Amino acid sequence: MIIQEHITLAPHTTFKIGGPARFFCSVSIDAELLEAVTFARNKNAPIFILGGGSNILIDDQGFDGLVIKIEMMGMEKIQDLGGQARFKIQEIHQEAIVDEKQKRSVDEKKVIVSVAAGERWDDFVDYAVEHGLYGIENLSAIPGTVGAAPVQNIGAYGAEVSQTILAVHALDTRTMKFVGLTNGECQFSYRESLFRKEKGHYIITRVDFALGRRGSVNTEYKDVQEYFLKQNITSPTLKQVRQAITDIRWGKLPDWKLWGTAGSFFKNPIISAEQFLKLKKKYPELPGYPEPDGRAKVSLGWILDKVCNARGLCKGNVCVYEKQALVLIAKPGATSEEVVVLAQDLMRMVKEKTGIVIEGEVEWVN
Ligand SMILES: Cc1cc2nc3c(=O)[nH]c(=O)nc-3n(C[C@H](O)[C@H](O)[C@H](O)COP(=O)(O)OP(=O)(O)OC[C@H]3O[C@@H](n4cnc5c(N)ncnc54)[C@H](O)[C@@H]3O)c2cc1C
Image 1: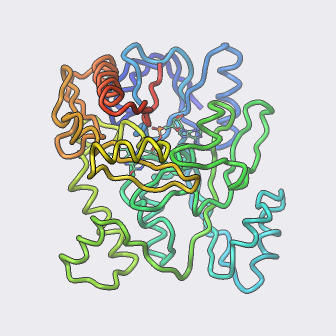
Image 2: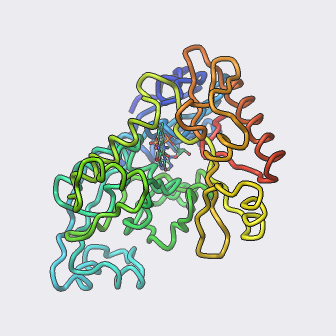
Image 3: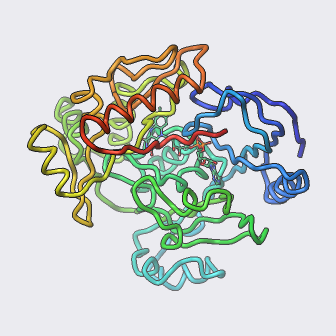
């Protein structure tokens, strides 16, 4: 493993912004990861774990520590579960990383696929769909790596990755031991997990997914329904759903290979039922979705667009995307400072107009 110095981070991110890392290395096996963490400890340097760089904003000043790029590769179908699924899982996960609740939910229709953290997320979705495995097709075309997917519990079009995760394997940096965490232990919720709450504690090396051998596709989202209506398709296949999601996303989101962006910059806020009803009186068309605890998740894209009129708003070289107000795009020459100033303006506008305090989805690395 080679430790490089003063490596510019902008090309390692989809925002294409950011200064240098004091130290930088890529790791492709567990031993290299241990070596890298030990190096940082000896230098007393903070660590930042880098996947595909699609959910971060690196500061113009860079990162004064060690950036570890996760490049562990490999995808393996551990077990195609037959009738004795409940017993076989116990054999596979000898370290008891499957909890009781999951043992019941993993039935004979499931296939367990174990995927290394450095694999591209969308390559894995492609693999699953090609092998007729259900569960992640609605998460098609999301950039980034498999290892980062549990971190913010990626979600789109009515699906969240946590619905398919059986176990997460990681290096526990406090004990320097490799551990397995059950789905329950990962504390997943909307764009949240243990890995975001306890930043730096775990470095994910591999994720086990339980995917359906048989299943039904989820086409409940309006855009998806309209897509199939236009195509005159009444019972879409797994492959058709993947294609639909990919087409819809490309129509709505900026091409991150051309523009700097990290997708949705903010989380959709979850507010009390009372606050939602008040806002609904003022803005009858405000989209909101009930949460299991009685609160409501509201569409921030709609608020930024219809209430704040923010589409196309710019600060220097950074703008609110014309087609989707939740997304910021950076033109060549953009700085992290411009992104932060625009983001703060948007936060203030939303607070003034609706009383809602919004939270960033993209992580600012400084
Ligand atoms: C155009 C576009 C569209 C997007 N659409 C969606 C969407 O629909 N839904 C959605 O949820 N997200 C979306 N995103 C956000 C992003 O793709 C996801 O959050 C993705 O999972 C980030 O993966 P990454 O490998 O790029 O992570 P990075 O950006 O490199 O890292 C993100 C965070 O995860 C941590 N991390 C990365 N790898 C590991 C690891 N192995 N162990 C521990 N921590 C790790 C990093 O330290 C950092 O805190 C979109 C982004 C873009 C640019």
